[in-house]
Amino acid sequence: MSLNGSTDTPTNPTKTASLLQGIFLVAANRPSLLNLDVVATIMAAAAITQTGARFPGIAALFEKSSISSSNSVDASRKKDAVANMFLSNAATRNPPGDLTKGFVEKHLGGSSKTLRLQDFKLLRILGTGTFARVWLVRLAHPMQGAEDRVFALKVLRKTEVIKLKQVDHVNHERAILADVAGYPFITTLITTFTDSECLYMLLDYCPGGEIFSYLRRQRRFPEHVSRFYLAEIVLILEFLHEREGVAYRDLKPENILLDAAGHVKLVDFGFAKRVRDRETYTLCGTPEYLAPEVIQSQGHSTAVDWWALGILMYEFITGYPPFWHQNPMEIYKQIIHKSITFPQHDPPISSDAQDLILALCTVDRSHRLGNLSGGAADVKSHPFFASVNWDDVYARRHDGPIIPKLSGASDDSCFERYSEDEGQVDIYTQEAREKWDSAFEGF
Image (tube, rainbow, N blue to C red):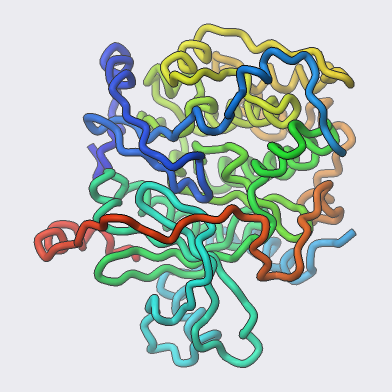
């Protein structure tokens, strides 16, 4: 059993079903930025996020046969060069200590300085959840030329991480983000640090906000818009699976941000895990997006992300996921037993789009597109992507179909407002330090 209470050993499906019935969903009014809604579960089981609040009034949507919708800056050479260098030299990575040292030298002056919360000015909360908050911050005493730069600072209270059995997930997130830093469609971890009460992850700020927000406003995306975002996400999964051996395990619109040019940035790696050729049995994710093998405790690997991509594609094109119910247990039953059907839309959902969704959402993962011998190449060669130039996608040669309305790089208008009141906070006692500090040595 791992430190966070999630087991990586095979479990009995009957016990798992019983266990799922006892899960309490502890989250804010809606799934929030950066997977901050990671949930405590009963008897060291799963981390599964809240479902009902994602779709207020969704029953009405299912009754409608048609849902209305509304309808160039190249990627910087510097970022492309960084990304290409990263991909061509994947074995050479900055050790965690070098990340902090480089940031301190560049922005704070002097490589011997220890990074502290006091080095930043907290501007506003971008997202909040059960045991973490994400703040928009800027340097309290910036070097000349860095006065206007802002960052996203993820703050995790040690007491809550321990209480919710998320120690391993937090450490996995930090390690994986450090390894993938520089990939163009993934949020960049700049550095991490810690103090007596909290863990901190300093990330590049992505000002466009969640793609979830744009989808809710437009109700659904036209296929050409969906294709643009899906192509970039396919490259992310190809990179994570085939270069890094990582299963992401929490693909959903809330975890996809848009940058200033309308390109995607995948955030929140709290459930990501290196699996390589192994399987894991940890129950985690968001109910509507869980693959059948996760629910049935059959052991799972990177194939769960291809299933989730199919669910995401369905939600992009129709405005809601194929499986939904107020009761998560009913969602799980639908995923296992119900076939995906498509609503009547005007214009109709193309046969290529339907075929790709069904190929990705194949219950038998041995036949699931993306999990076959061809890997991501099979997905990229599907007729739905026939018009896509994959080199252009990676190079970000075309602006996104939705360009966030921003006044500047530090604009925060695309994010919802959250209260700064933390409520009652548990103290990280000396006894807890003696027991748990070694588990946070990576920070």
